[in-house]
Length: 362
Image (cartoon, rainbow, N blue to C red; front, side, top):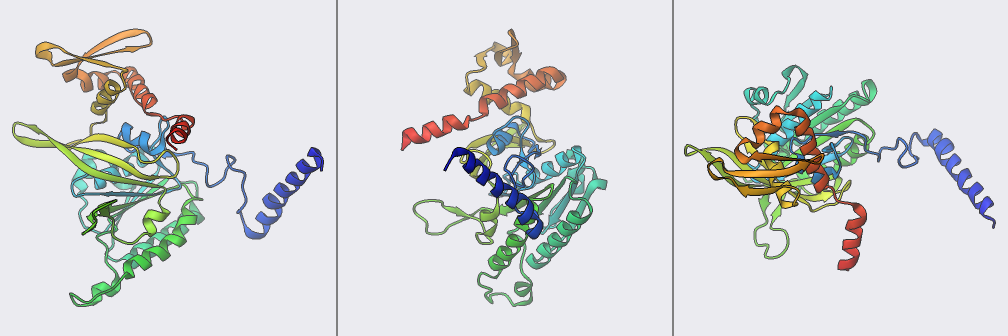
């Protein structure tokens, strides 16, 4: 068979799939890279540049729109804050935020401090798994009909705190074996394919619980079965990492983030960020450690002024005392932009390099 006849056969198959089968079954066939549900075009800033990079591995990245995300962690590790920042940054992009609160733990005052526009935030207080997914299904169907291009972030906080109707009706101690997991599994099979075709980012927060008796492998698990981990494109695990004190008062905590599943970028990467109780994530502070670690910036002792950072921007050597680092960058928007770009650049993993490393290891 000639090359020309092969090409004609391929073209005929493409025409048949993209026109005839799409006409018969709806939009099911696509050319990847050309308006397919798998193509990612919109990302929502997580609030942390290092976290953006381990999630999306690209400049100006973050949470992917059209995908499902699970944030799990120990108490006090920043799950709710990250979901609030996703809502805030969705609003900044002209979108709408939706919070489904199963813990009755949201603080309107803290949301306002972060900068969330309460008039563009839809809040639900729901207790049971059945009602959560019934409401989600109805909301997503409404979005699909009325505003399929509208940017919307939906946060369910948290899946671990939600019960089932049967469990709520029973007395304490009566078992409801695997009912919650079965309900979630059914719901995720219905929601997953629809999310990918809309401008919606769906975020679930979950708790980390210790696997009692596990000696090897992962010592932690998340409640609710395997459906959310399976359907999620991104799974981030958060753990507290140290505290920052001022006048003997704890004013901030460090957080370690590990990407335990990633279907859009290299997985298993780690990041660190700092959460201040009065202002959220202080992103700029974390850039310095990354740039020093990657040898893009040097650090030396500066006497009473503390450490001094030295680095080059467009051929010009710049020196900033560590105590003035955040203040200096925040006051100079152009320098801020360039240093952020530098931080992203040193954290981007070239996929070809990753492949070579895997081959060498094998």
